[in-house]
Image 1 (tube, rainbow, N blue to C red):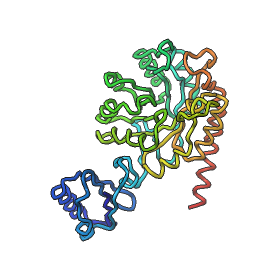
Image 2: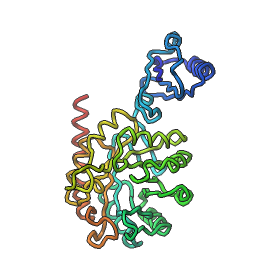
Image 3: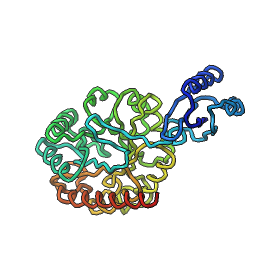
Length: 342
């Protein structure tokens, strides 16, 4: 249940209403203060709450019952967009376009430092790179693990770019203490024990959509993290598995506006994993911007032909320069169109 309060409602009366709901109906009441109104979100069994009694409170403007199983990730509870700001100043969800760029796997110090410097010069705001790599084949390169984390931290020191990298298991959480954004990969989207533990830490979590997951299942996974107290969740559409074989996955760009309607969380798009082909990354990046994505995650490798993982979908630094210029230009034009419509 959602209770929308009247503008300029007195804080004392809001507190009295909140206490009465919690004491009389044994529900948890979360408060969200928006630009235009304050919203109370009730979590628990609300079937026995008398709506007439709620409406009778002079601070209440409207009451809505929520059918969706996710509450904290629901835009009805939180009308304003969530903006995630890092200590270094970068923001996600504030209307700007962030780009997370870097190699699929961290291979050497020279490689990651070079790629980090090049993507920063092109406008990337975050450095992505895999230290732990979940691979379909047990014989494929599995990543440098803790050494890879150290190399990412070294590249961050050189360039100042915050780092984004994937976690594989609960026991690794302590190792990721100095990682700026922890990524949960598609295969772990429903690793609920991992999600619950990530909900206990104060760090942004990038949650990729599962290989064949519905949008509701994806949002329910975000709910696991948020239910633990961590509201810093970024959603990442990276393509889903369908019967189509022309691309690695099928990029569901319609998920971006759907998420924007259903949830207040920022959503970015990974065209590299979605298509599996570097030749398609530019077009899908532009399409993602037009769909309203808050950012992009793009794989960039200094020598894709000899990459230890996913070279076929990686751009060269020179190709990334071109893509970055085009997506930033499109974003500028898109924002102008939106301003003219207001």
